[in-house]
Amino acid sequence: MQDITKELEKIKQELEELKKKMQIAEQEKSIKDLPAEAVQKVMEVSKEIVKATTDIAEKAFKVIKYSAEGAVEGAKKALKEEEKEKAE
Image (cartoon, rainbow, N blue to C red; front, side):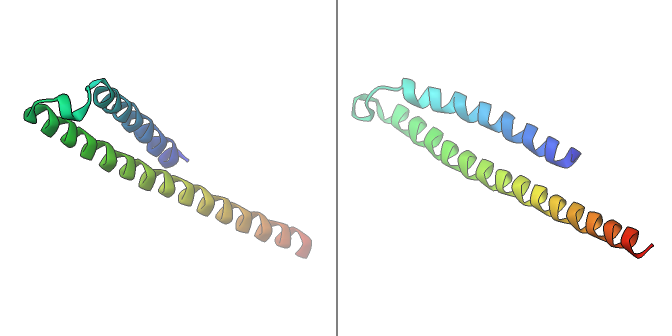
């Protein structure tokens, strides 16, 4: 459970960073009105946003996977205990 909590906290921090980057990108004017340097910076930030979004999605999937695996293991344990009680 602590691993899931840590992963969720990491995802939360990365989402905050992503939010800041997206605000920077939104503040820029039309790309055709920007000098080449600014366009390059916007493109770099955009790439970072896409990468961060992908990373966050992958981590969220892992959290869901670990949660599901934990639930399955918990259910198996409960069934074993129930069967053991019935046998006694």
